[in-house]
Image 1 (tube, rainbow, N blue to C red):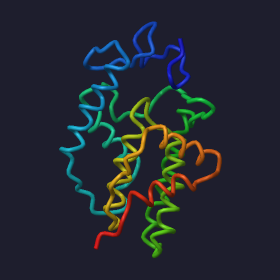
Image 2: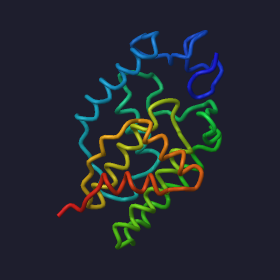
Image 3: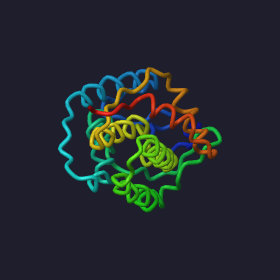
Image 4: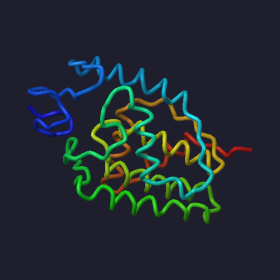
Length: 198
């Protein structure tokens, strides 16, 4: 049996199932998704940023955010995945290279402070966002953690964020376009989501 990420029976799932092992011992995928949403919504609302330097936006921080969001659901919350995964025609970064590739992207973030144009800033961030999505460092919860991370980054850079009310498919489609070299849909989503903090 192969799960939604194209992984055949890996140690993250219950035997003979595509349901991820979880602290709640939920064996139904839909019920688990509902529980994830409920618990992560609470943890999201509890979070208070203490970041004071652009250099703090790194892989360690991304892992900490994942751990914060998913601590109630998965034992491995905050840990880099140890299996290779893909979704549809999108193959994500091999697990052995996740740290190296993610560090390369995070090293670009301090350069954002040298950009004066909001349009250029969002375009560069969209590119980094897309690259991190291709890396997909966690077994589950990448999208939520990544949006959480970039929301905090936008606030740090003086931009307000209000994510547009779009369906998950729209996010996935924008990332697929980015994977194939077209960042325009992702740039548009991020542009619609942000405004200057005046």
